[in-house]
Length: 273
Ligand SMILES: [Zn+2]
Image: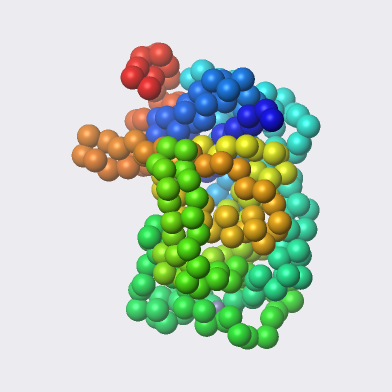
C-alpha cells in the first residue's frame, strides 16, 4: 500500500513556523516512504476563513520547500480538496450516524453548559458536556441554534499506538465527553470533517500536533461508528517560544510571510529539523 500523508492548514491567518514544523515532519515521512503528500484546505468556517489566506498558503508553503502531489491547486483523484466544496460528504456521514443512533440534537448554549457542569474539563481543556440533551426528543436537521453531538460510550477506554508517542489510552466520559459533530451555525465540526476526508482521501498516516492527541480518541470512535478503517497517527511536539509558550497566530513575526519579507532563508529556518 502506498503511504499517503497530508497537510491540512486552515486559512484563518498566515501560517507560522509552528505549522511549518509539523508540516515538515509530514512531508519528510511521506518522502522517506516514497509516498504521496496531499494538501487539504480546511476552509469550512466561512466566518473565519479568508481567500487572501488561501492565496498566502499557496505561495508561502512552496517558498518554504513544500511540494504536494494532490491539492486544491493541482487537483487529484480525490478532489475537491477544499473542505468548503465537500459538504455532501459530511452530510452523508451525518445521516449515517443519525440513522445508527450515534448522535443527538443539543440546544444548550455555551453558557448553559458552563453553568451546568461546574467545569469538569477534558484533558485538552474542552468542557465535558453534562449530557443535558441526551434523552430529549430529537430536533429536525437544520433547526436554528441546534447543534448535534456524538454520544461517547462512557467508561470505555479508547487506545491506540501513536507513531511518535507510543501507547495512548483515553477514557470516554472522563477524559473527553460528548462532542459536537455538527455546529449550531450549520457547519460540520472539525472532528467530523477530518475523519470523513482522511478516510475518503485514503490517508494512511495523519501527522499533526500533539494538541490533537485527545481528539484522536474522539475520531477513533467516529471511524468505528462510520465503519471506516482508521489511519495511523503520528503526533509531533509543539514548537514553543523562548518563554516556553506555544507558537500561535499571535506570534506575527514568525509568520512565514514575515520571515520571507525579512529576507530569511528557508534552509536556515529549518536548521536542526
Ligand atoms: Zn444540550
